[in-house]
Amino acid sequence: MTHRVRGVIARSKGAPVETTTVLVPDPGPGEALVQVQACGVCHTDLHYREGGINDEFPFLLGHEAAGVVEAVGPDVTGVAPGDFVVLNWRAVCGTCRACKRGRPWYCFATHNAAQPMTLEDGTRLSPALGIGAFAEKTLVAAGQCTKVDPAASPAVAGLLGCGVMAGLGAALNTGNVGRGDSVAVIGCGGVGNAAVAGARLAGAAKIIAVDLDDRKLRWARQLGATHTVNGRTEDVVKAIQELTGGHGADVVIEAVGRPETYQQAFYARDLAGTVVLVGVPTPEMKLELPLLDVFGRGGALKSSWYGDCLPERDFPMLIDLYLQGRLDLGAFVSETVPLDGVEEAFTRMERGEVLRSVVTF
Ligand SMILES: NC(=O)c1ccc[n+]([C@@H]2O[C@H](COP(=O)([O-])OP(=O)(O)OC[C@H]3O[C@@H](n4cnc5c(N)ncnc54)[C@H](O)[C@@H]3O)[C@@H](O)[C@H]2O)c1
Ligand SMILES: [Zn+2]
Ligand SMILES: [Zn+2]
Image 1 (cartoon, rainbow, N blue to C red):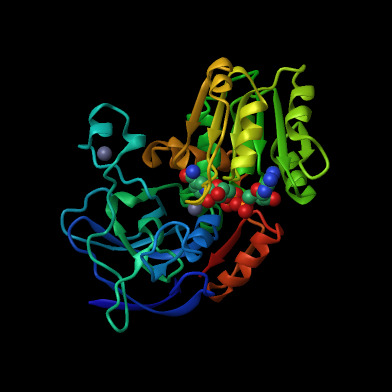
Image 2 (cartoon, rainbow, N blue to C red):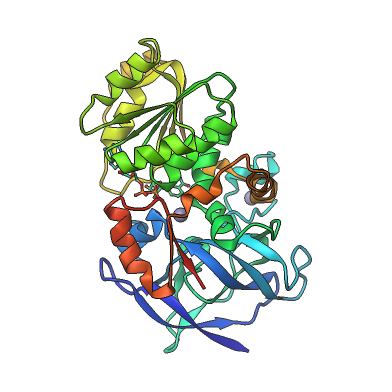
């Protein structure tokens, strides 16, 4: 059987997104059909629409989602119809060189659905991050479904599927923030503010939030920032150094994805400190740094893909912390919008009016 559902696609580079009919096949071996209940609007969806990720248009957008498994294909044992799940884009393979070495969070051969979702004329859709959840139903690999406590609302739980997990994990996993550390986060959208929340959860003593927008900085305070710096009016590197006894922060998380903010992160870090790049740059961006500074300042320059998370390990744990009142995931949901509200949500994201808009069904 083929399911005819409404979905949001990006047909060509830079064009506004469209809501249209999408054909979703029944799950085959290893696949699951998920009835989507909520899907957050992430900056990466906008990168797709602008052709910044690749040229495989048309895209079925949306990838920060939670929903209920409707059907599973043959041989699927990990999830069953009725399960409340968060969709992930790291269904680890268990057999690639990273998995074999015991580092599955780097898995280089993650699973996605084998069958394509299509337009009515048969055109194959490229689902964003192998998910495509701005749709009433989506088809994924069963391993992309992570069961979590159904007491969490779908709008909140779905956010762990991408940006919020990326930010939390940039602090908790990649940055390895520990008790007493000083942490600076540059760019406090959904991802950066999740890094702020992650730093608080890890016991950081000082958390410095940097953005160009005071609204974002107010949210950062709410999520655990002890200090804020507005990069429009202040010298970011100097301000972070002054707030850390003249030294710089132990861990600086870049959540914008631009060379100039990366340079700020590089120089705002203490000797032997760590820079974590979680913001996604575009192909034309270049970084220039004196090699002597790279050597002389020591420490670690790391990139964080999806917060180095393991969905099966991290999603249920973070949902439990949320339900216990120890992690304010609800603060990330600025508004809920209908499926045909994605284009306007992009505009609000660009204007900085929201941490996350979440499409609810
Ligand atoms: N690494 C990953 O796995 C991963 C996952 C999801 C998203 N991302 C990326 O993370 C980045 C942030 O995503 P988001 O959803 O939070 O986007 P967003 O647009 O909501 O947030 C970006 C923030 O950066 C701020 N900003 C812009 N220029 C700045 C500057 N010069 N100095 C300080 N702040 C500045 C903006 O005001 C905004 O608050 C994007 O590049 C996104 O693609 C990465
Ligand atoms: Zn693997
Ligand atoms: Zn995302």
